[in-house]
Image (cartoon, rainbow, N blue to C red; front, side):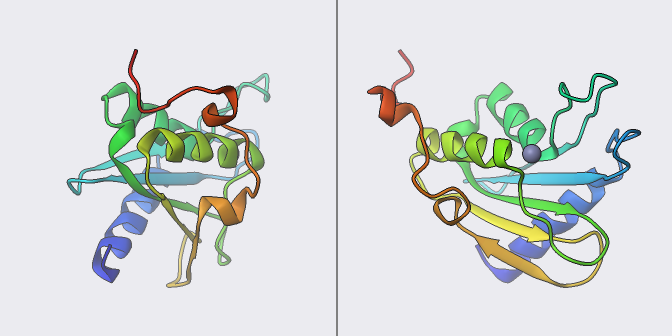
Length: 146
Ligand SMILES: [Zn+2]
């Protein structure tokens, strides 16, 4: 992905962040997933009065990609939140990203940014969640649809 593509992905995540439903944490997060053909699917955090049912922006975006049958096409995700320092996915989202990476069969780049500013930090999922557990550990072939 070129620098322009990364910037566009970050901007898509920033735009999605504006739709976050985060009345409890007041910590709005946006995410944007880029697919192999350049399509972008966004997500925003979606909190719940029971707190524990809240969904993170990354999870929403990946679930939306999956609902469109496109989870195997994911190549990158941008995550945007916080005021000035880039944020990284929470532990649960790292696990969900690791699963998506195994299903996609390729490395998924994770671009982390803040709500404003030009600072972008790129991480690999292996870096964010080393020694992860996934479908391969269960003897499943995530590429098989059967
Ligand atoms: Zn999360």
